[in-house]
Image (tube, rainbow, N blue to C red; front, side, top):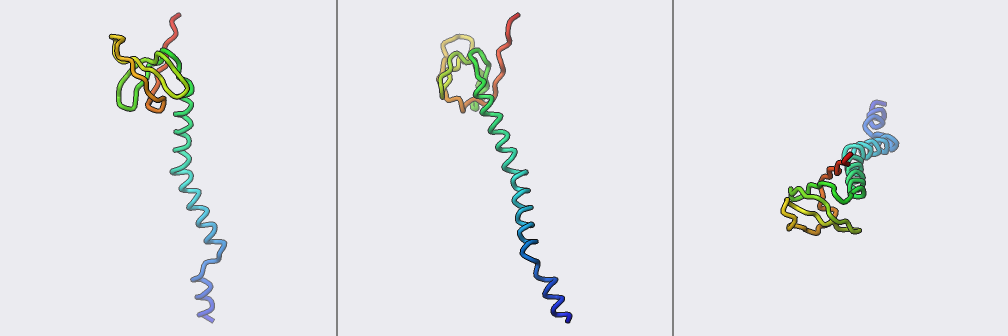
Length: 103
């Protein structure tokens, strides 16, 4: 009699194992995948809202001003001498500061 009760207590049912795996997957989703997707949406929205005149910070750490925008590239002007204009991919932009509107 005790051996039968010990076998039932030692072997969890299939439903418990499925629920455990579902809980682990849900935990991974909310800890790892969801924040990453949220950040990707934020970056895509930032790149979609680029305008000429915005000040940007590139992934390499340079500040510049956007002077032209195409579908996948932007031309950024670095420095105040107006001679340093570099075309780069939109993905190379890490941060955007919108140009202030003069009143």
